[in-house]
Structures are given as C-alpha cells and as structure tokens.
Amino acid sequence: MPVPPSRAPLRLPHVVCSLVLLALLAGCGAGGFAGTDVSGATTERVRINGVPGPPEAAARVPSPVSPAPAASPQPTELPGLGPKTRAAVPATARQAFVVTGDSADSNRSTAVLYTRDGPAGPGWRATLGPWPAHNALNGWTAEHWEGDLRSPVGVFTLTAAGGRLAPSDTALPYDLSPDFAVTGEGFHGEPLEGSFDYVVAIDYNRLPGTSPLDLTRPLGEERGGGIWVHVDHGGPTQGCVSVTEDRMKELLGALDPAMGPVIVMGDAESLGR
Image (cartoon, rainbow, N blue to C red; front, side, top):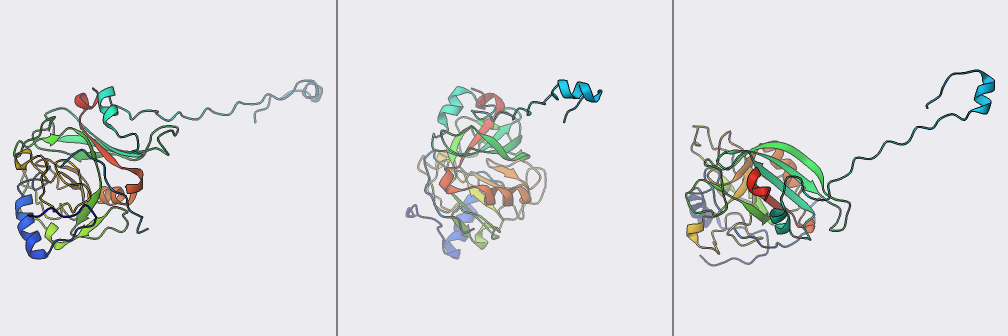
C-alpha cells in the first residue's frame, strides 16, 4: 500500500478502507494496533477580621489584617513521572495526556490531561480528569510486539484523529468515515459496537498526521500497529487505551495541535523511572 502524505486529514476510499479496517481489527479495542515516537504537524482550530472592645481601645489599636491565602503551587513537573520518562517529553509539548496503569499486568488505568502555558511557564496543571481507563488485556510492555496483548510504554505524539461519528469540536485532523464501524465481542463478551466512533491515533509505529486507518508500519508489521485512544467498550483492549464516550468527546475538544500534545502511557512503576 503506498505511503500517504503526512498532511491531514487523510480520507481513504470506502472500498480500500473496508479492507484496511479488517486488518486493523487484528489490533486495537476490538484489537490493539501500534506507531512511532516522533513530532507531529499543527493545524488551525475548526472552532474582616475584627476584635470587639471599647471604642477607646479601637482608637488606639489598629484592626488586625488577615494575610491573603497562599495560592496552591502548580507542579513544575508532570506528577508521577521519573527522570527518564520526563526527559522523553518534548520541551515543546504543552499538553500531556498521562495514562497510568495500576500495575504492569493490569488492564485498568487512570488518565489525566495536563496543560502548561509554555515551556518556561509556571508548570503543569490538570485540565481534564482523572478518568478511569482501560488498556490491553495483559497490561504493559516496553517492547510491544503484534499479538502480545500489551500496551506500549512510552511517550508518543498525538497528531490525528478520526471516527464513525463527527465530534462537536476538535482541532486535530479528523478522518470521518463509516469504515470505523466495528462489530463483535471483547474479551469479557462485551459488545464492541461504537468503540471506534471517536478515536485519537497514538503515534506508535505509524506515520504521524495520517489517518488512523493508515496501515504504514515504519518499525515493521511484527511490532504491531494501530494503537489508539478510543471509546471504552467495558473491558480490556488488545493494545489501545480507552475512555468513555463523553470523555473521548472532551479529549477531542481539548487537544490542540499547536500545543504539541503527547500521550505518556505505561504502568506506574515504569513511568516512575
């Protein structure tokens, strides 16, 4: 399949996309796919205190003044990350979607979107979350391979999105296509329908800025592909991260390519290194 240009959004013909989706379902929420840790393109948004006493005492003693409450300090670093993980976050990134797994073998995690005003700004602040999330059935891995049922640990850019439904607001390049439809059941027998109504492509082993449906795998097919953030179907994924539909809509509305958004994902122990 020829490599599409890294301009977004990419819209694939329906016949080709149908074949593409069949391949993708070997991956993410109905499966997990996987992409590369590289920078992405930008786009414009489509979008009294007083003490009682005699009068003469009041004339002699000034009223005490209460000090203003101290402002809560903003964290200068992303919470929960160790020096190795922090170093992997690009200096230009001003949005970080941090997904922290309960343990290396757990499929449950917590997601928070952090934002800062600039590289030299006052620090990171939580702007969305914390939200409960799912990750892959077998947990996490620092070296993801196709079919291992683990989500890749790392810091990856977020440069494109897509889905079967149109979001009310997003600044990301968005591929609206019926080929994001999915059927079948998850690991716990839960229906997968609607899981890909809204997705954000994670740039692990993929060309940044292209449609989430793009099958190009720079690291090779054996390293997996199509790792997405998508709508939660009530159970673990094959490699993706999932949050509820309303949270996906919030995330799509908040992510801004001009702020160089990244996802920081992994189990708590790995991210703490």
